[in-house]
Image 1 (cartoon, helix red, strand yellow):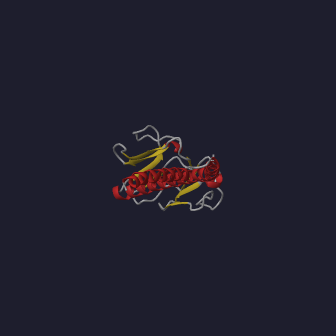
Image 2 (cartoon, helix red, strand yellow):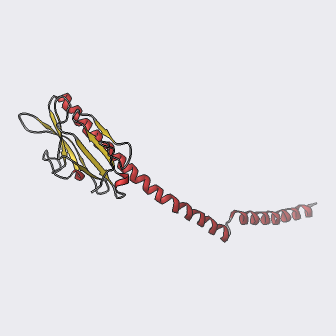
Length: 195
């Protein structure tokens, strides 16, 4: 009986060793499986990366358009609340109430009191990655009734050109709207032109 007890564990150990080795083989990849997995991954990345880039560019354009519309709405609301003229113009010197000439550098919102000095309410500085912004006017003025002194049109463009450009319009009534169709001007439904 003691002999059988000693032999039994030896047989079980060999069987367990063989079973363990076969499980290890099943868990590993063969070279062919690895190559197939790499091919599938490369195909997926080839499709996904351009789509991801397009998504990033679309989001950047939409975000900058919304930012401009929000700034214009803030300026109009401030003009109504403070009962004074509020100006939106291109960013000049950072932290200053002096207007610049290039909308693509960003914009500032300043008070235009009849007496006293102008006060900087908000400023937005653009980064190099932001879409370019052009306007048909050097400033947008909202009077104390929320009306704009002139109709203003803005175009936001990225590296993809006219077909993907966004538009924003400020009517003399103070109404601010952004175009819903990329590449199409909100003010006349015509095609947008990027600089």
